Image 1: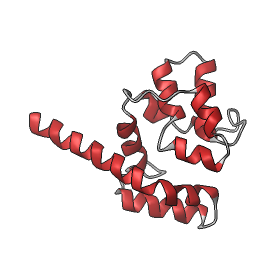
Image 2 (image 1 turned 180 degrees about the vertical axis):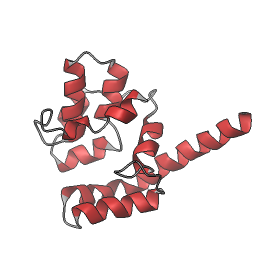
Image 3 (image 1 turned 180 degrees about the horizontal axis):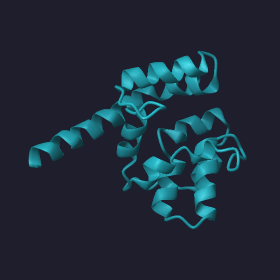
Length: 138
């Protein structure tokens, strides 16, 4: 839950250094002494490894924050891509339309989304499968 609340902290003007918010946010949380699992989730949220290539920071992100595949990356991406900017529930289709509309077709974020969309959709599907299994067990 903490990573869901903190994942976009790198956008804060007081935290922003490189302009790549997953990296800026993770560095900030590490400096504050947050648990490395939270730091790692923030560093790699929502296909940040793919977005890092658009910022020419893929090596830097991987070196400073090696990805831990045991962490619930799909769950965090699911929360990020099924919640709108004002906290409203959205489908992944609605969320991707919203992101592209806010940034415009030529913006780096929209170009990143175009490349990352298949992995984003796959992660949302995996999270939804886990949620449906959990609901059956309850």
